[in-house]
Image 1 (cartoon, helix red, strand yellow):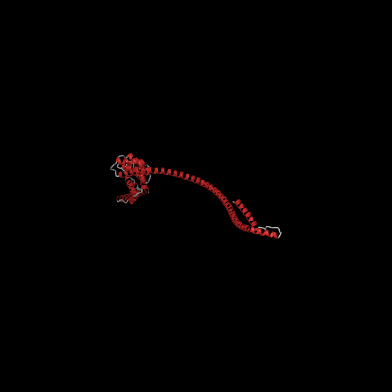
Image 2 (tube, rainbow, N blue to C red):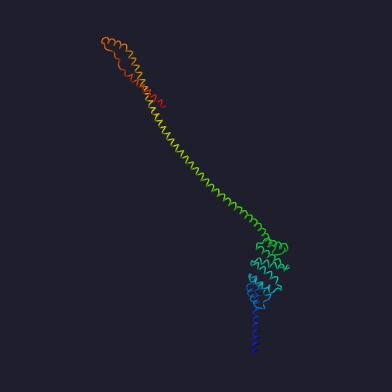
Length: 342
């Protein structure tokens, strides 16, 4: 019984091995076909399946798998397989190339510091490799992307100087010019920043002075307004005093005009009285002349009458002379009042 079981187990193992070997071979063959025609997605799938079999876990299959993954832009999967390859296939012909690919994959994944370390190790160990200038170039690129422009400039200069026929020389020269341009821009930006800071400082100082000036100006304006208000109040008082003085002068002037009018009326009255007095004097003179002319005859007649009638002789009352005397007195009084008024 035991012999039968052992034989069956041996037959099963042989059949399984034969089947597994056939599947592994088929996967590897299909992967190679896809790889040869550039069908990187299919090649990656089939080669990944191929390495799952023990008999395909070798340097060749992993190298093809890594190449398919890189061409399919599966950088993370390719990096993992590179690490596996470098750990398990150290003494193979593809080891230096896989070492280089690891550094480049780290660069593609944006892990610039790790990329610089990996590519630097490759350069130290493979100075005569055809991949050496490529490794230098991607070290420069990683330094450039990491903003280490001065270090990158040195690497690019080495490439241009030591490998003038290298296909990446043009790219290296362009990056050198870019670094120079960036350096100039950085200097300009620095100057602009300094100028901007000075401008902001000057602006802040100006605004501070302006606020202070405005504050002082407001205070000065307020003071001037107060002074102007006081001056206006003083002017208003002066105007009120002048108006009162004008009113007083106007009243006094009206009084003087009234007095002058009265004086004028008195003057007219005086002139009238004088004229009347002169007329009265003229009349009196005429009467006196008449009286003198008739006095002889009257006297003679009176004497004769006296003789006839012994009656005392009475001189009649002269009313005209009395009026003239009063008029003269009034005229003199009016003349005196007028002179006192003037």
